[in-house]
Image (spheres, rainbow, N blue to C red):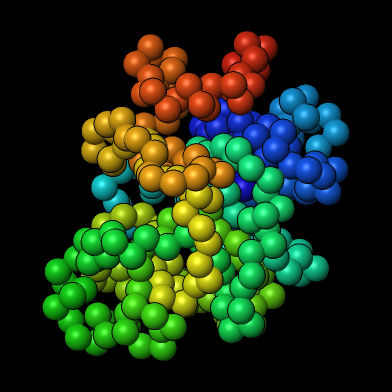
Amino acid sequence: MTLDTAYLRGSMAVILSVLQHSSCPQNIVFHFVTSKQTHRLQNYVVSSFPYLKFKIYPYDVAAISGLISTSIRSALDSPLNYARNYLADILPTCLSRVVYLDSDLILVDDISKLFTTHIPGDVVLAAPEYCNANFTTYFTPTFWSNPSLSITLSLNRRHSPCYFNTGVMVIELKKWREGDYTRKIIEWMELQKRIRIYELGSLPPFLLVFAGNIAPVDHRWNQHGLGGDNFRGLCRDLHPGPVSLLHWSGKGKPWVRLDGGRPCPLDALWAPYDLLEPRFDHLIES
């Protein structure tokens, strides 16, 4: 996970939900990537979870800032939102597989089930796919009108590209390094700076590189979109089917809506995991 002051409250809820639903919480190690205030954030984690196994890794935002293009929502432009591109470089080489989680979700199932997802030998990551989504809307007319660009999505794919949410992924770091996938993502970001080919933050480069080439995960592991749309943040219901992970992707975050006295119905499912303590308010606000 990434760790910062803006989403610290959400991160603490994620940790608590993971530990509470794990059959062997003593086997879980958290790897936090952060861009600043490492010491203060570490103290907060230790104060909240004295026995948690975790490590914190610094992230040089200067390396990515020049590659970020403005998107439809300012929160998506945070350099830390792009740290997932560099996990294979940031984390120790002894780590071969990790689960990447956003900070606006909770688990209600054992994360070991997600971690042990079967990933074929030629595949780098696994995530729930949503093939009914309108995939074309994630790229601009400039992209689709250029055959040399749009053909990318039909070359060397296991199946037709589908949308997947990058907030929940099982990543084979060794394969990622061997395939130099960080470079492939960055190449699309560099092109975006010259020719605007997408609108939505860090997601489109992942789609361009991986869509159609990922191992499928049951939809129960990412009931996403609970934050509503990216413009108005309207309330949304769960997708049909069982639930193992609830994800408040989108504009509306449950802690903001709860504090404002205008929660969505599903925000009540997040509230039991809220560890906000008044004595730490100064850290969250600083």
